[in-house]
Length: 274
Image 1 (cartoon, rainbow, N blue to C red):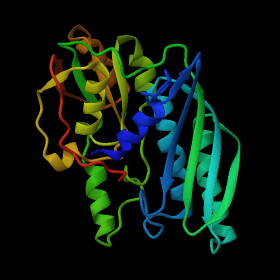
Image 2 (cartoon, helix red, strand yellow):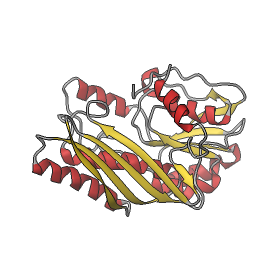
Image 3 (cartoon, helix red, strand yellow):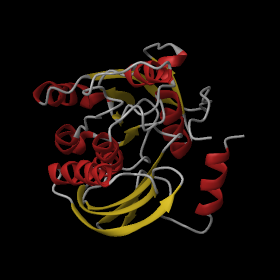
Image 4 (cartoon, rainbow, N blue to C red):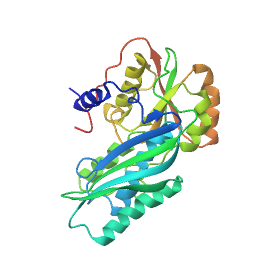
């Protein structure tokens, strides 16, 4: 059983706002991700600055995935009592600098002492034309941006005691905000690619009650690689030429991986968070 999905389903009973990367309420979009030590990272892998930066950018990813403009952030921080003032300054600097790059104002939050470093960030954004997970039709093309699989490889280096480049996508994800804003008129649906290709294709299929025919094969390790923070998008085959033109214009690698069909999709990846 996927206990993460079970709990989300339990929470969503009676709510019409749960099911996308963020909750759409009018033109406002609210999203939250947590970034916990020993679940998502170890402190020996990343500097305090890098932890703060990544915690913020993975939350911004949800807003970008929905074609929204992120405006405000609320930060919850549970910090070890032994954390130095310098580390606190660097943690805050990472979050501030990342937020500033996207025009976000940090407007508040809460802090508490803890046995480890856990962060929770809420992003408040706005969109007149949000990109949702629903809308996929049989015959539609499914594609992803970027090159997937490196995040898992870099995670394995770190778990084996190695180090990775500071520009690694595991350390510093790069979001596709310009591409998504330009390509939005041509898309049926989409979401951020954060739990692995198979897992996130499975979410699109579940939201639209369909299956897929794969046009590109990946190893299971690559297709299950999480924390890529690329985009997973779907569109009518007649829009392929226009979307490829925009991907070239914005220097965004784009790979067509599947087509939607009637049926059901079964995800073979293990859940990351439990």
